[in-house]
Amino acid sequence: MRTLIKDLEENKKVKISGWVTKVRDTKWMLFIIVKDISGSIQVSLDKGTQNNLIEKFKGILENSVVSFTGEVKRNENVRLNGQEFISSDGEILSNALPLPIIDKANIDNRLNYRWLDLRNNDKYMIFLIQTAFIGGMREYLLNNSFTEIHTPKLIATASESGSEVFEVKYFKDKAYLAQSPQFYKQMAIASGLERVFEIAPAFRAENSNTNRHTTEFTSLDVEMAYIDSYLDVMNLEEDLLIAGLTKVKDLYGEYIKENFEKEIVIPKKPFPRIKLNDLYQELAKRYNYHIPEFDVGDMNKEAEALASKYALEEYGHEFIFITGFAKTKRAFYHMRKNDIPEGYDLIWRGCEITTGAQREHRYEILAKQAQEKGLGKDVDFYLQFFKYGCPPHGGFAIGVDRLTMLLLGLPNLKETMFIFRGPNRLTP
Image (tube, rainbow, N blue to C red; front, top):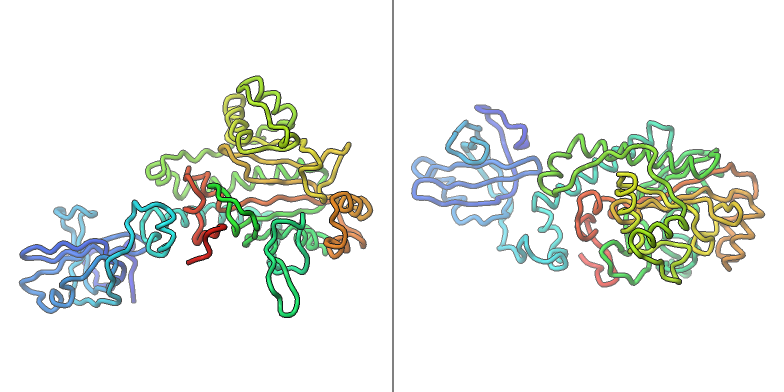
């Protein structure tokens, strides 16, 4: 039975298995560094007494997969943790060829061999950290009476705006890949589930090659019923992010500080909040920035970056909620008050991470707003959810990959996705 390297005890016979990361062949000894998911250790083979093992492992290349049986011994002369593994038997499980990439290759070359790229400690640590972040948020939701659901990704009509969707052949008909689970989250509310969430893929047919966009991504979606206003949604998201960040800091805070040079800051409640028009004025006054005419009523990349700068300067806070967007810039299902959508964007570290809102749950008003957007029959199936009674509700979505990118201060979300998909990448 295999023992993980982190669980090794001195003078106890065990079996270890892992990757060869370094080989050093001297006159009297053959040293092999073996790494598994938990750590690394030096295996020491004596050429004077272990001829069979020496012959077996002679010429082995890095990245081969090996297994050794033996004992851990204390040796202060060994640089790696002051321990060495004295093997009595060993086996090559898989020989490796020389690698076609190096760690310092550019990201697009590394993505061609993503399974090799992820063997780097810092690379796979990204996913352990991401797991902790999502785990902390999932734990919070489950502890607050949310039900995890799994919605379909193949849908019969183009979702939400009717644009930026992938069309696929579906037997003799056609289908679309869902942009989000939005309609089905609301269907769950109409069914009486009251509080739901999903962590699943979403698809956007955007021909965009920025550092924070992708055609397939992982989204954490939340929806809850019986809210009084979108402020309840904001309050929930504050608690959710605090839970996730606290989990990350507890498990990996020091590692992130040392290896990614990022401090995990647990934000204080309430997060700063500002109306969009007031923000425009602050950006103009403080930074001489004026929103371009085609972005009026909304945000853009430059405004998001400056909004974060403003939040830090004015409030000493990494997060800021922005409200008061134009109805032309928001989805038809956002509730409106005085013709202004009852929703928000949440900005963190210079980037939008969430659009949230109270939804319109009254059939007649929702149908009218859909008609205003010219959606018509495309959303007929969705409108059915509201004909037979539906409680007030609201929710939001968070892009997991973008969230991880900002958490670790990485330049590109290609690093935070197990497999990246973009306009020019469909493999591996």
